Amino acid sequence: MVNPRSVFLILTMVFVLLLVFDWGNINKDEKTNTSVYVQNLAVNASQEKISNNELEIYVDLRDGSIKNAFIMETAERDGLYKTRLLSDDDLLRFYFRTNVSGFSGKDFVVQERLSDTLIISSVDGAGNRLEKTFKLSGGHVVDIKDKLFLSVPAYGSVNIFKTFYRNRNKSVDYGTAFSRDHLAYSTTEDVFNDEQLSSVKSREDYLGHWVGHSQKHFVVAVFDSLDNQKITLYPEDANGLFRFGFEEQMVSSEGVLESTTNLYLGPKKKEVLEKIAPHFKYNLDLGFVFGIGEFFIVVMNFLYGFVQNWGVAIVLLTVLFKIVLSPLQIMQINSMVKMRRLSPRLAEIQQEYKNDQQKLAMEMTQLYRKEKFNPAAGCLPLFAQLPIFIAMFWVTREAFEFRGASFLWIPDLAESDPFLITPILMGLMMYGSQKMMPKPPQTQGMQAQIAQQMMVVFPPMITVIFLFMPAGVVIYSVINMVLSIIPQVIIMGRVQFSDGSGGGG
Image 1 (cartoon, rainbow, N blue to C red):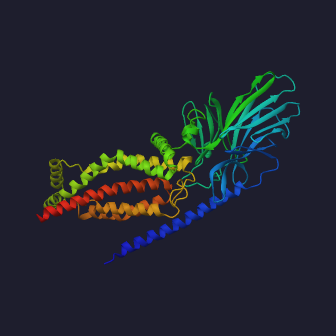
Image 2 (cartoon, rainbow, N blue to C red; image 1 turned 90 degrees about the vertical axis):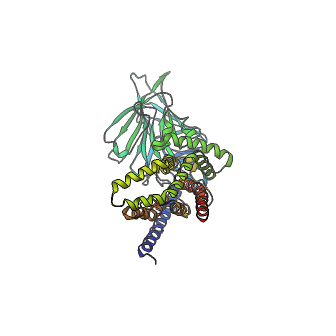
Image 3 (tube, rainbow, N blue to C red; image 1 turned 180 degrees about the horizontal axis):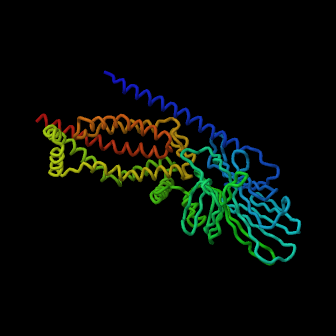
């Protein structure tokens, strides 16, 4: 007879899945359309463009700031071929400016312009001339050189402020699953700090090599790879803008005051970040399992060099880890086999001492000791795989390599499976694996009911959670589950055959 409660549970789960699927697709479409929209926005007539194969920079002649910056995507998809990192409009105000103290010149004029270099200058009322050179030095770095030509000799120091201006709005980016925007900086006291802009309530000063802002797959920062600089964070001003950056003195050279600024506007790729500045690699946010995640990236980059597909690299990495952890799985399966063979005796003990819980626990402990059986042995693989799963989640969420990388029917390993195939497959396999496991000694009562309910509830719950996970980590979980079930089926099948043969002899 069909259980109405089970039918209701199944229908409820199907309804929730449909709602989540519908909401997720609309949400992603909106984000994609917004990203395509901003990439095609006409820039202000006062902005001058320089570019290379990686970056596209727009400098505003009104104040010499970088008001727009785009990074080129590795491949065009859904009309999106570049993603905006800096902007100054209603969707997001986030731009960068170097400002010399005491200089208040008028609009800048173009002195020289090449495809990847722009030189502009401005003169103030006292006749001082400020010249700015913007050069894309290769990769994702922008070099800015400020030169202040004084009309008359001056004494004392002149400071330059290298400042980001940003409001509270989220970054405009098509890929925002499990994403968060945050302020990031390194100090002499702490190699990596990340916090929300809103947490800055008063001016804060530090010493460090870099400060910037991080989002999924990308980071924008001003840096000095050699020397510590004075990092200053400012709270929100009347215009709704937070400020953060460097403050330093300009260097005098033959009567000219000079300063060089380095900006990074690029992807979170381990080998790229490591070359920028000390501790800059921690912008690849891998949480408390950074070491494990970093190792995964190295191994997967190595595997990718052979197979040229990030999905296949994930599969191969899963197989490698399954081989390494195979002794633990053998221990788990042996524990399942021994549990199966001890079940009749455990049932007898439970029946005999059902009214004496203390005696029941004592007899079961003696049986375990006599048979050299450890019930906890079956849980060891789970404890070993937990940090691996967490590291895979962080890697597939943050690492730029997986952005837009396709595998089979999945268009983007950094986003969730749009067809829900892998999450549902994971839930079904988890349910099947639970069904194959021997029943615990408590086959009756409250514990048995809880175990049965967990078998019904846990797989659908995992499926719902995996709907929002990056497809890369779900693929890892599915392959890992397959490699766990196959030996489980083979060995348990042999045990059943052996038990059957023994019973017929």
